[in-house]
Length: 252
Image 1 (cartoon, rainbow, N blue to C red):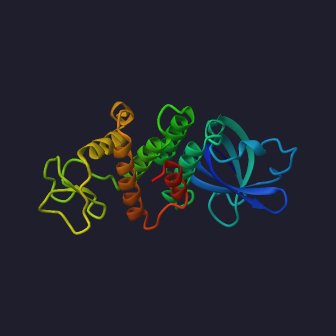
Image 2: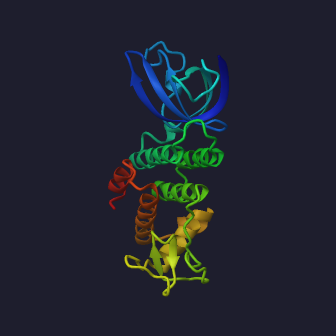
């Protein structure tokens, strides 16, 4: 019987019985963890409100077998709030749908429970903090998070040099199957020709150049978002359920 303590972000909750919940938490050191939080749906629960999606928490788990992953789910026995990002997200539809897509993305990229995913954890913390602050357009914050999540998981797209032969850019064509922009010689069927401004925007989103991002035109933001969604879907092999609501809120 072992206690584990870690920082984490609540990704999802599920009802269990009459008063309990199963909470899915992306932690700093232990990766994605699913645990049972007993009694948190009761009105007198001491920490039920802290275990809501978008919450950044200091959490303690109790594992009977000495491991967080194994037979039976661990118990969530103590929770302290670090930051309640949901307060700046849930009341705005654009931020809420973007944030929900971030949580789903983080869960999809950490499909092995208990496996450390520090970079994904840090990306999600920064993205939710930025989203809650409302400093930038919610869809652009989401696109930046999606591109960086792809990059830290080994799927970084190229927006300048040819993804196939390395020919220096700018290159005109974009192919999700090829890994980003490609030159004329490496062009494959299904390649598209985005505007140079959209390519510059995507590169800025990946590197975090918000000066360029915040000055982009709406048409280029829409085109860039479409490319990001297509690229993400290709590598995840199926789309995000929550992304359809983001597209609806953005009028895409």
